[in-house]
Length: 449
Image 1: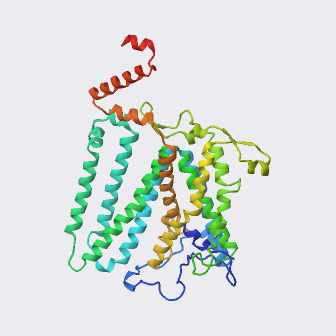
Image 2 (image 1 turned 180 degrees about the vertical axis):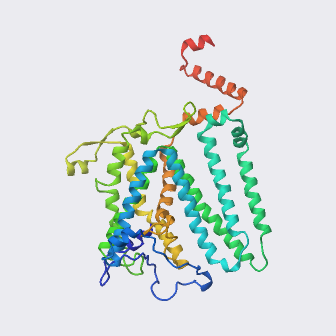
Image 3 (image 1 turned 180 degrees about the horizontal axis):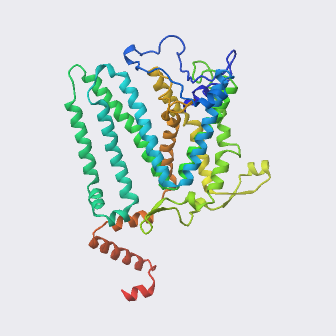
């Protein structure tokens, strides 16, 4: 996140952390960034201090470095408390929050593109950008409704039509936007218009697709939503603390060993027993509310998070390797299997996740801006806070699909319910014959048939 760009440094001779948001790449520090031009510099409005007056008054006697420290700390704590409150409100609220974050991140990135080329008066750029956002969201959320709300779709005639022709409708909507873009092309500005067309689509890929994966993870169980986000937050906070208190040297510099507080913070996320892996993974695994897949109950018209926990969330006994037994004097250890999986999640968050932040930092430096926006005092924009989260969400989704997810009886049943009656009967007869061949069908049922 933005508040951590100062933390991609570690102590070096003659250097001292000052709390600035900087990410140093090879060759930076003198002159302009190679390849930049004045035409590519956005028309950035004067920065405004949107810090609450009560905070400014309380911290007016501190240096700018420590003032920024306290503002970031207080706002971070406020956001963490808000995060727990949203979790308490349930999965529906979490979905709306993800949608809100997605829209704000899209707005921040598109606004940068608009500022860069505003002087060319490109027609319909922002209108088409928001239109494509609506189209892509319609496609993804329509897929979600078809997958997880089969019982509701079966009851509502209009929804049956929309689900049946969902992909055709989505394609038609996108095709309309594509034609509108072609008709808006202006002579002498073709290259710039195609550049902004690509800008919009890359933004959709980064923001909308990733937020859809976040929601998919949520439906697998809120623990797959809460734990990864908490791991990234923990790693970001610890990296910022290391960067703030122990100075900085460039993260990437020819001839120098990579030394980053992100690497220093890795033990706090992966190894130490009091990290989110140890606390969250153990505590949350005990509650159905967090481990059960989020499913729609057609009888109550509400989301249900009740189930019989799978083996993934049941205590198992593991035999330790001989080397470890000699060191800790234990032969076995009792763990939830999810705790073992959380090690993979925390390792990714510590070692690969920060590259999402580095990518965002490089993007901002390319256009000579400090933050994506000034939404959150001391932190920047919403995108500044979620750059690493999007990369983490993709990894979690791929991890679940590769190592965790198995056949989902509830999802199969929902798909069966939307079939025609003759198709349902055919599947029933096939399944009955298969169970009889396997000797699994009770004799009373066989006789009745």
